[in-house]
Length: 213
Image (cartoon, rainbow, N blue to C red; front, top):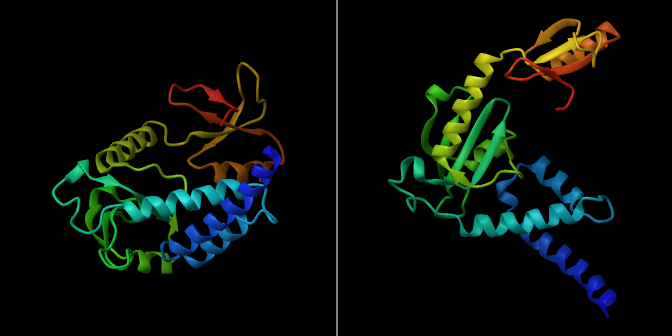
């Protein structure tokens, strides 16, 4: 009997996930939705269960999130429910559109990583997804104040440790032979390929190097 119940649960999860995904389709850009659809298919993905449950959770979250003006006046205490990103830009959605959810949502927009010029205002999810912005599937709702605090901390850490990625010739030795350091992991990888040797380590805020990242 247990095996029968387990077998029956899979089609139920699949059908619920498909229904959930279709209900929130407008909140995705086209390519991301197709990628999630493929990843949600048990025939194509070992992570199908994760994505199906994620779609179900997202559909419930979007269905119950505040509409326009329902968090009016809360300021930094307003709850951010959705996060979109594209390149160095981020959009944190606190309220969905009163009609349909995507044409005139409200939230906090940070364009090109410029926190000083970030502002609260109306955000067209329809427009930003048309340009390729992706919905952050791993975002956990939190207050706008928490978002701002995390970004300030990240900026401070970057200013203190601007080149955290290090190329060394002798990883694991007590006194590493540092060839060069870089602001991004991608630049360190490129340098390693060009050098044809060495390894990449990360410099922590206390100055120590680690291969665990």
